[in-house]
Image 1 (cartoon, one colour):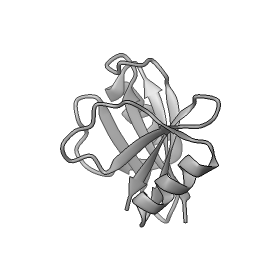
Image 2 (cartoon, helix red, strand yellow):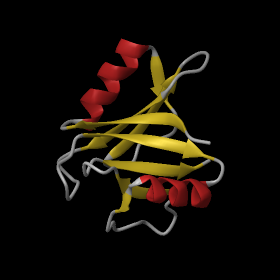
Image 3 (tube, one colour):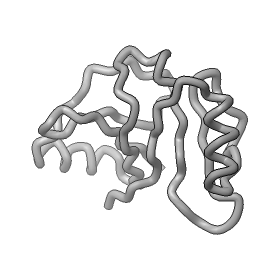
Image 4 (cartoon, one colour):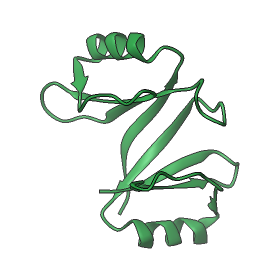
Length: 114
């Protein structure tokens, strides 16, 4: 089973985006941000996570994508590949909990193990 777990929003100024979106949505930082990535969550209750990604540091300048969360990443990746997704050649960190795929139109998205 997949669910939209996060919208990843490309930004040019990460600190400014954190301030703006935190106030605009009544969100807070989930944890201390990385140099080019921050995760915002609702201050109260539940809601979709907003991840802020510094668009100027990425190799591909795509500014937005969806993260799909699942407890069974391997199974869902295989299912999505059978539906027409394709693997993306991506430089993963050692601790990566995500797999980058592309839909049939070439739009990238991540399948994240929860």
